[in-house]
View (spheres, rainbow, N blue to C red):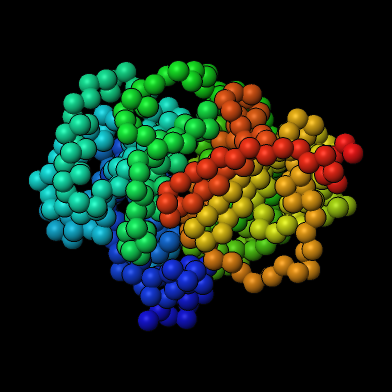
Amino acid sequence: MLTKEQVNHYLRHIIIPQIGEKGQKKLLDSSALIYCENTESLRIAAYYLSASGTGKIYCYLENKEGHERLFDEITDLNKDTEVSLYEESNAASNEASYRIVTGSMIFVKQITSQLSKNKFIPTIISISSSWKGSLQTFTNSENLKEFIQSLNKVNYENSLESPNFFANDFSAILSVIEGIKIVLNLGVQKNKLFYNLLSMEFTETANIFEKLIDNSFDAPDPLPKLSQEKILIVGAGGLGSPAAYALTKAGIKTLGLLDLDFVEMSNLNRQVLHSFSRIGIAKVESAKYLLKKIKPEINIKTHQVELTESNAAEIISQYSLVIAAVDNIESRYLINDSCFKLNIPVCEAGILDFHGTATTIIPKEGHCYRCLYPKINTAALSNLPQGVLGPIPGIMGYIEAAEAVKVLTKVGNTLKNKIILFDSLDMDFNIIQVKNYPQCPTCGKL
Ligand SMILES: [Zn+2]
């Protein structure tokens, strides 16, 4: 069914029982139609659609400027993907496996008002405003019609703030996950989702529009305050790619990237900063190449080493915050313990198949990683690769980046003393409270 090269390429999908080779073939045969305001609001969704092996991507762009360069990046990320601009006369694009409409309320209103003349296909709609966003999936035309009618009655869209790129991109990645679930027959979200990445509210609500306009959580935009900050990302892979991309767009002054590895084919189903043409290149250099193309003025320091007990303090102390974007528990312990000693905050995340977790560690203020997992017999852990759906690290990496922004600027609510659990099959985010563990080997006081 798939070539040997494709099996290697999509291995992290294929080893998930709900996907397998058959599911990957379905993805390769699928097509997505995505509506965005401009190239920048499309970029991250296009990366994840392509990385996951979506066969065809049709893009409706209100402003098409810069799309050629993005399309080149997408086909370099995955040679199995064809990407083109949407044309109304192209019958195939109107019969895509699903469509995604994502952007401000004004944009979504304008697009959805024209949809009824086309044949119904499953439709994922996300509206974002400032740091807030919503997600709804429609699998029948009646529900979609009802939604469009209620959207048309909304008359306060002009008072909504324009989407922050964090919220826009977060919604776009969630939409890609819903699209993949449609293709794989894994069900879709049952309830509407509303979120606010500044207040860290994730909720199911009947009235999405009211939540989007509700400004009771009032906080200044933290992004303008970022221009002097230095962040180290340990790991330039699945989690490191979206975290580095988001922080680059956010306007961070200096980004440190630490990773010893080289780009491999099997990384490309999820590690969206890399590409086919950069296979064999150090991941930190491959990531730097793309990030510099996106924002030439960013200062990127590369550390092509393994983080060890002997170099951790020297490297970490050059930065004001660390993003742990690693895939093993030893590195998590090392980052946790080193940062605790240096009094440097850590944003931490983990991923597995359709799930993700994240937490924020602020030394001497909240819990640490060892409070959650005091010690684990690492010899008993399996070293086999674990399955992960391509866009899952995208969501968790964006949460880590948003957390880093909030910790450094002291704006909004963070995941200090909290863990977020993401289940993409139910499209559910659950935040649970955690406490310091008095006998914690790192931060315990007993
Ligand atoms: Zn602790």
